Length: 105
DNA sequence: TACAGGGCCGTAC
DNA sequence: CGTACGGCCCTGT
Image (cartoon, rainbow, N blue to C red):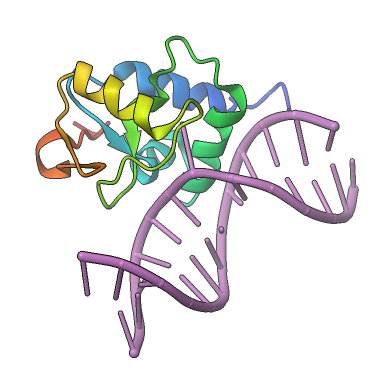
């Protein structure tokens, strides 16, 4: 809302765009990179509300447990996009050990 | 300014 | 491994 501060939302977008192909990040990591490690919840909701990101990169964001979580267009679509990106999704979950990406890297 | 919603997280049992 | 509880945060009206 404020104009002076960098919106958490905008920050998330920037981060999402930095995610390499075939990689995913957790809401926690995203929120953390955005500035607040505890804003994981808000991070996901923020995207959902906007659901108009550059290319709906929100599909690259999953839960800390590896579950794909939710998606504005449906989990089904989210999984499809992840697979198309090279991320293997099994039982609605992703191997964070393989695809988890950190902005600190 | 205040309220409520929400795609969550981490811990505990 | 699954469910349950509480807590933290951001955005929109």
